[in-house]
Length: 610
Image 1 (cartoon, rainbow, N blue to C red):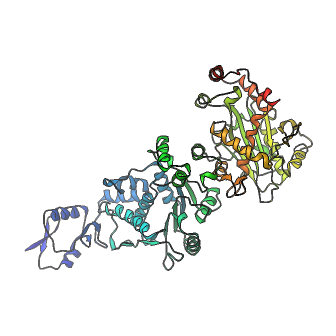
Image 2 (cartoon, helix red, strand yellow; image 1 turned 30 degrees about the horizontal axis):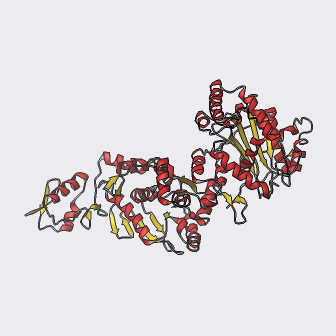
């Protein structure tokens, strides 16, 4: 009597099962033949290549012979996690086990997890961040040796769910790719390649006592601050001391806590973490109709923002609503540094402080047909508040924006400010800041087409004096570049600079929000948008940053007051003479149509300003 051992081979029954197992060199064909035999009712007495008889798990330390094709496939999967995920990863759905269909942001997450040691992800709910992290953890234990992965969540049930998702991926890999299993408990998986997958609920002392190579923290913002802070302070030194260890943190926002501190610092480049943000509209099934439906179901913008808004501040306190923040973030770009010889001539380094829209053509700065607004805020330059120059191009709206203008009063309503560059520094003293502002406005841009809205604060007078004297041998600064405003509401005269006070700051902020909503302002710089996401009403009722700085967003707010000046009207009159005739005709048709319905076709901004 003999027993079946695969590949149509049989061994004498008197041989022990262990001896039979030792004599078998398993292969994919051997395993497939065995599984077919099992399906047909055979019950071999030899040791099988499955962990505890479970056909979806490979037993540890079996002898396995790989084909050349399998070796090539293993190498490719180890090298390219996205290829691995799209070809082999599965997820449990309402319809059962399904092959993963990665969205673009999930591919980016996986590539970041593979290439970067420290990752932190801010993500809206139900975006698949836990599934994505589970794919990475399954890949990590499959294609590494002697590495420990620790998974932590705010609750034990959540940790178990995360481990289960990684297990599902491993269990559904082809047999040749599966890691051999030594232990397979609810919260502890050990493989024959020396890798372990361990799950715990987060406590102040989680992870202490054993070496961690790969740490995953799920919904870290929702762990109690006392636990989160203590845990991070205990575990981080162990991880940072290793050259191969890595941390992945994912969460929805939950106020200003340890997660916010790490994420905000990562966004600014102040720590080693690679920051990634996943917003609700990046999901291919979530469009404006989905937003309206969810908003109606949840009842309030506040409730929607709590679940999907990705904002650390309550939406009721923010200046901009979720729809406008969505628009702003979708347009956000990573600004780039541009080399200018003019700064070498004045021996001032701006490479870490002056950033440009990557799509902006710097060769157009001096063109006579272009008009610019510099919005300026001055600080002392001692490492505290930031000195900012926010540069905007005044230009017509695009065709879609023009057609969406409602109730235009004049042609001026069809023009907007398009952000093209930002200088932001808290280390340049006022004299050096004045040299930078002069160089930009006079040497790089066409000074005849530049206007400046300068916040008239403690240092305003000092800046004005410096601008006219910093380069005495060649100074071409014209004080007419500085836009004049009333410094008191009852004043009859205009003075250089814009003065912020309690009675007008709130009005400026509210006007800015209205103008942004109707596309009069296009903000794309990352630092400006980050500040906008944290800007709103404070406890004392005034407007300001809920956390961090607001110098950059305030220059954008101040810039919108330029719309109410004759200087703006003059610029638009000149632009109307040079813009595309078809655009001009479209503006006139909309203006004529609306004004025949409402009258006042001869409206003139000069009359309004008298």
